[in-house]
Length: 87
Image (cartoon, rainbow, N blue to C red; front, top):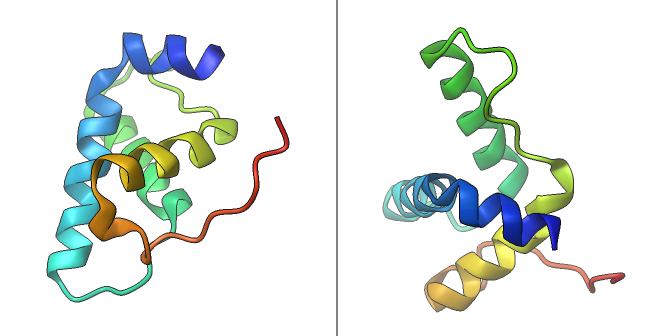
């Protein structure tokens, strides 16, 4: 539920994750870590703004973003490792 709220309020995060994943795929990468992609977004955002209270991506959202990426772009299916959800 919190993920859905975050995603609805911050759709640009998913769009940027898709863009980054395609960049790596097109560069020939066969495996991608969602944590790496999210870390890059966090880093870029920290450099773009001086607002310390804005734009936080909860680590718990990583698995949800991966599943969305694979569902929307099946070509990413073998690039990300997923585990069974506990919830």
